[in-house]
Image (cartoon, rainbow, N blue to C red; front, side, top):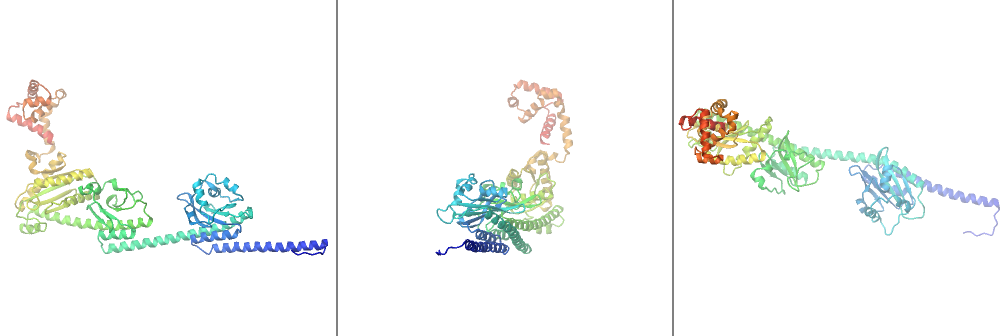
Length: 609
């Protein structure tokens, strides 16, 4: 302080006042210019970075510089997927603040974001009015994240960050000291800054998305190159599966539902269940595994599957030991792996089809029996011997489908089950259309009846899994190549007989018995014969009297009257009355061998055909 005894005149006092005002104005102008230059410099620096994370921190730093009374800042960006606000940049907080999530319908952040209007909160009381609907736990998370102890928020600025209609987020500025009160000018300055910052954020976000897309396309291209090379090298399935596991960074397993085999990458423990070993659910190609990549069905509690299809036909699936959703690149890896696996399997199917055709052509030569010596040599390639009895087995899959691929798939699956049998011997085997043909030696495989038992077990499991009926017939075993055609013919008759009776499983020709005599008869001729004999008993008044039922029970009980009456719950005298009535209506004598055979045969054929 300057002390003086000089008395200033009024003019001198006015001059002194003007000088002091000039100094103060110059100081204020210099301060404003400094702030303005800092603000402009901040705006220029915003355009200097296109990396979003770096840019957000830069924005936060400059926002605090533009407002000298600011103590801490927080930028929250809107996440459209979760529809909440997530911290992306901060100053004056611990990193624990990044765990905070703000709802778009509550608190200061939600209000400013939803309304799109900047707000100044000059006092704590004004702040409290807008945070009453935020739960205490999340409020505590924010308060506990401040750098420093016993800090009190005295004021706050909340500004929406947006570009046109694109809502980006909210900028929050906190004031811990009460040396000055935040006012509308501070808010306008921050809003102007954030408006420019929004442009930079949008550009940086576009640049970041472009980098991500380029990186994604480059990685996708690399994945494609790797699998293309595997395809060129004709790599085995084991290598394809291992490559997929290496790229995914976790072990996987591929299940071939047609060949009924598994291919596991290193580190993957595939545990076969009782269902697997018996050949049911895990091998089925029904819709229980017909899922798309977005809704993987889990065969176990901690795994999911990725199906591999040939059109609408499921040929296998990758089994993944994860429960979370797949990342985009993981989808690409499995998509590319599936394409190569499918190509590999199509090649195998083509080779299998070629082998089937060769076997079928050789079998046709056996049926024609033109060159016995050459045929005997050919049999040895299949482990068969012309010197031992040979027989033929035929299986027919009644899949009732018009899709050739599905029908072929059923044949391949059934053949795979036959080939998996541990007790299988040597045989010539091939599939064609909806049939499977086997040529066996009694010495190298088993007798016709033993093979029928083995095939019945396979067919039983198959039908339990797929609900698709399979019929089979086996011819007799005979010595000599010229007898193969005979056994083949008998197998076909047994198969036809089984289909007529809708009796699934395998039937040997020997089991048909007397019905062999009628296999060549037209079904209509058999029906006409049955109607000719039994139709008189089917007149309504006689049908009501249960005469035909009585006749059939009499035949079933081998013409023993007491047993028949007991089964029908009638008195023996009533039975005799009915039998005499049957003789009168049919005009036969049941004690006559010829008449008895005629009636017996009609009843038998009506039940059999």
